[in-house]
Length: 518
Image (cartoon, rainbow, N blue to C red):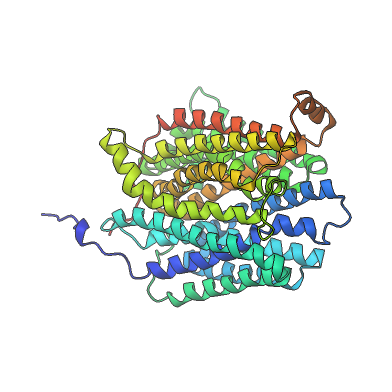
């Protein structure tokens, strides 16, 4: 007779504190430098050749381009970990690159080349480890204690915000009172501590061995599906994939107009849509050469990627709290000792309150009322709440544009709404991505989860590029709204449409369980 693991007797793996401690310090380092980036660029000499109004737009462009890099390089980190080095070594080596990037920011804060080199190294290092730390933590659990993993993933997200809270409070003050070298140097010190803490747990970690070369891997199944011929039928999926490749290459020609970052991101989105859609169209043809489990695994991943794509509008709204909302805050009244960047501390502080509140109060209450708060239902609601936040912040902008003095305290309400949406989308999506990914695709699927933020920031850059067109700005002027207010209401509508599409698709999605066996 087989016995099932006793859930009540399951214990938290002893190595988890090392991973949690690493994440707390790393998040302090990242959010510390990111949250002052726009403010520093506006006031530094790095953009001195640009006039004041244009400097704000350029600082916002640099920040979102940096974020695109941070969330693009998870593809590289996930691929290296899954194919060659494993998660532990990939995390450790990219962390060292990360430390070097922080050193460049502190040492070269007055040199444009040195500073932007530092941003590039941080994007590479932070992006390289981003899909792996959460996935590596998931590897420490099995079927016997996976119920604890769901709690730890929430704790993991809680500790991210613990680090972010203190970074958001302290680093803007360091920039104001100690100067940029210390403001960028302190996050660098914390990143070194994060790397050290992770290394100290090296003998306790479960290191899932690299899978052997699999003839039925995702790529092999997709290739078979696209190339296979069926009697009496064409290959429409292959045609779609080829058109996607050609359209992606053509989009690179837009680099002269839109910039290389936007062009590359557009190419990536078009390529994924074309190849992924073509594979889905002809996937059943792969069953002739691959087992059903492999084909069904590919279909699961493709369905997950659709879920991911529908969350990208949320991230276009969320990441602008570090740019658009900071710029709005600088137009508002506040105490002399306060800076607009410090308002971002509200976000992690509220997350630390809302995660335990949701798990201990809200979700049990909803279940007693007969409504199960499934992962996809929570994510649908979260996208909608982000839209509400932008309706409020747009209304504040209308008051500012009308000449009324508006206290920065009014930003508390949109921060609360956006943070509630974040907890419902991001904290939920992290565990959702891990649980739905087949074993051999954990790192890559988590990389695609991070890629949602890259695409979200792409929508921001595209909107900023659009309002630099005289025709578009003329149409905005006809509405009677400022550019800032118009874009705020535009993004609110974007989120509401995304929530509707997400909710409709989620009703057809079938959940799977891909935690490893004990």
